[in-house]
Length: 166
Image 1 (cartoon, rainbow, N blue to C red):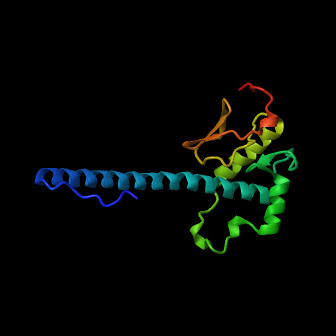
Image 2: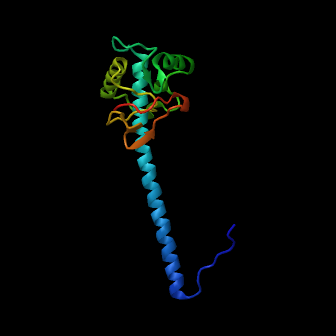
Image 3: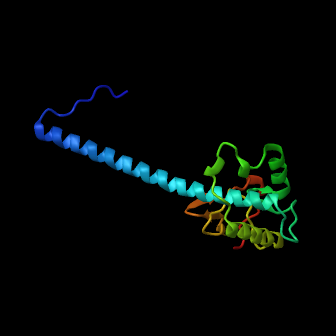
């Protein structure tokens, strides 16, 4: 699209152009590697949360939690159980095999506590894609902060009821 580009013919200008292009390419490769590693960490956190959530859904819920009302992974527990019955559990993925780490029991307990808090009306997780291993997803002025990334709150235009107190 740009056409043929040639380097300058003068020796010093040619050396400067090659050095500049080498520096730009090196920085681009380093930055891409850093982004890949950071993204891997984020998705590992999400995968751990999803595995723990599926473990909670497949087991017994804490007493007093209505599976038709509380939401986990942006769906009701009843709907998640239907999906697992139809498509199978991601915990028993035959393709991943032993590459899937074990479920963290502390994270499972935290999700159970979150379900109890949500049932009591103290925690609103609507719109959260998934949580983070190290930190509890928190509502901050309409934006959910989970792990190291902020996710905009999903809210249909017709359901807007004005600002909600924090």
